[in-house]
Length: 212
Image (cartoon, rainbow, N blue to C red):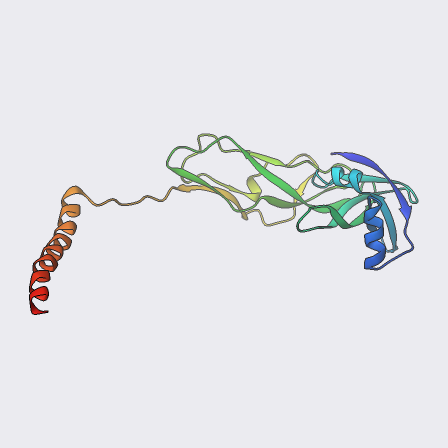
């Protein structure tokens, strides 16, 4: 798994005004907690943190104000511009087991006339905090209707165990919906009443004009 070193500074100002000031300095307000310790309020470089969080379950080695290992626990972003507003990090130790969401991706394409229905884009697993897999990949190339993968079917790396029921549906291949087109005779029969109605309306127009 990825491990990224990021510097930190202690933070002693709080509230919306202080947070805006921190972000204007290209820093991000961070709270570090876990293992029964008091939460520690930090600031960390926004660009470095943004790049690190592009990797799911990235292991962050915090340096500077504190020297700890942590995993992202909560991330708040600006809904429009996408920059980081606030990040929660949780302390971890080497050898410690943690529960994380592991991304599930697919490779290949199912057969023509079928659709891949992926129910889970991530699966909950338990792994060693400093050895979390990057994700799980499923090959669906050429798979036909009826192909199914449950959580228990996933090929998890050594040392990683499921944190959900094994029969939890991850994905399956289903038949693509079809549109029933009317046959030629049926189409002509449907058009006939409409044509007759149009003829009757046309015949009635001169009579209405004469009555006026």
